[in-house]
Structure formats: C-alpha cells, structure tokens
Length: 216
Image (cartoon, rainbow, N blue to C red; front, side, top):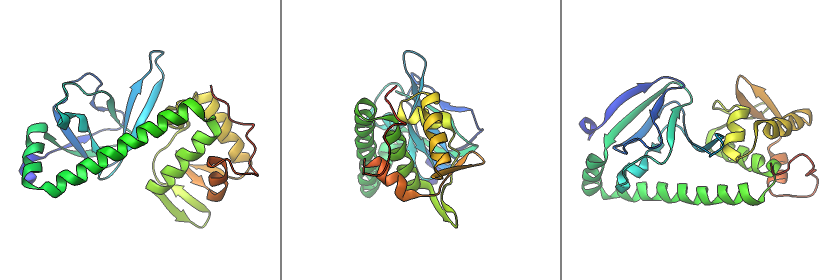
C-alpha cells in the first residue's frame, strides 16, 4: 500500500490545491493543520473544514469530479500523504473495510456542512461561535489545571471564517467572553476556562445574555 502514497511537506501559508484546480489527488494529513476554504462573491473567506492528523482532504477527487470545489491551505507546517483517485479506487477494491470508513467520514462531513448552513442562516453569532468552540474542544481539547486548551492555532479571523461572520463581530464576542472569564488566548490558541458556560450559550439555556451576538 505504501508505494501508492506520495509524501510531501507543505509550509505554513502555502497551498495544497486551489478551488478550480484539477481534482486528481486525495490527501491524508499526517502532521499539522490544513484549512479547507472558499471565498464569497464579496471576497470573504469561509472556512469549511479544519483538518488535522488523520483527516482526508480532496475527497471530491475520489467521486469523479473534474475540479476541486474549495481551496486547501496549510494552517501550520504540514506533512501530507497523497494518492491519485485511480489508486484510491484500487485500494477500495482490495480493502472494502477502508471503503466503508471513507464513506462514513464523507457522510459526517456532509451532515456538518448542512448544520453549518443552518446555523449561518438562523442563529446569532454568539451561539454559532459557542457551538464551534465546543466542536473544537471535542476534536482538539486538552485538559489543563485552568480549563480545556484547544490545541490548534485558531485566530479570531479563523473563528469568523468558520462561522460566516465578520472579524469585528467575532472579536466583539470573544472580547466579551474574555472579560467574563470564559476564554483566554494562549499563543494563538484558545483556553476554555468554563466549558459549561459555552454549553449554556450554545443551547440557549437561561443564564446567558444574548445581547452580544447579532447576525451580520
């Protein structure tokens, strides 16, 4: 299996592929973080997915599409293993259990995409940000004596791009939460000091003010 994969190092800020490029390879993240993004007609960046160790990128290549529908950019220095769509299908025929796992991953991405669209259309910014941070805690959280550290680089620009809001709105909400003692910034990472507070915000439970978040 190994000879089918091509190992590559991509430096922070560089691109694995751009939207519209020929969809000829599937990528597996071995180290680091990659953001998959699109740009709106107004030029605003929207992050569709933040990939880390073990995640697949460019899955559209295996479905027979001609072009990548989004752009993949290295959030940090990354190591990726890639293979062609043709080689991927060869593996699927040889290892059917792998095919089932890939289908499960793609379905999960699809469900998340639908959920994100719903949130952007109907939920206020504060609630969208709270839901996002809780997802990041589940994927990347590390417990410390002060709370839970989301152990990936996650800037306010990233938060805005992942929730479909403006940088100003995301910054305003994060500043409010910092003053309330809910979050703290640690070298471009986020420390969640009171995870239960974000559950209350995400679920619109009593006790949390809704005055900070408005749809942009």
